[in-house]
Length: 262
Image (cartoon, rainbow, N blue to C red):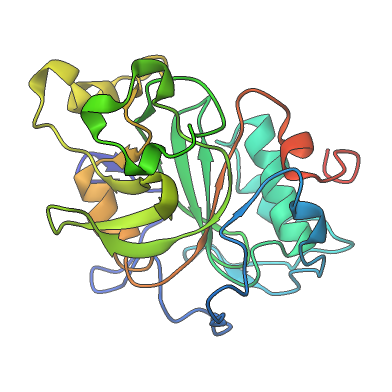
């Protein structure tokens, strides 16, 4: 189904929220500081290793069986045909280990220039092409969040990889955004086309990912997608965002055993 020019992977009633706030199991609330804002190779080994033994509603297509033995069910995996091999592996690890801590989560695949939104049980809810940082790289320059955009050099315009607990917020123009990492000023927001020379709307519309690098590090999505799929949940409460690395294997970066999640 097409929604404002954006492909929706699921069909919802006209009066329904595409990313329901009322999930089958209540989303837990964590006190400030109880969850790390970012997890990479050195810290993820201390993450919770419980199983996500919950059922997931798959957009009217029936119920997905729960994971068994630390692995996503066959029905869940078969619902992920659009993901790259690395994204599928990270999805299997997140669902199999319970790393999302009972919260909805998102995968940002930088190599494919795609965003995938999942419910707390790992069922895919929506996907969209994205724009991301101009430069390749998985780490932000120290102190970049305190600098003016005019002071950021092209090779410093990276979208950092990692596990982030998102936060709803507003930018300096009082526009609603979703903070991916506040300290480095990296957020998920609607695409902005104020600079016509950057051709951001055209870049989003192309079939290739090779021209989707243009931002200062933030993740841009089509306005229609943001309004329909991001704002209703991610713009109201926290979730977990996994930004996949592009300079090293995801298993090494996040610290999980690739043999367990092939």
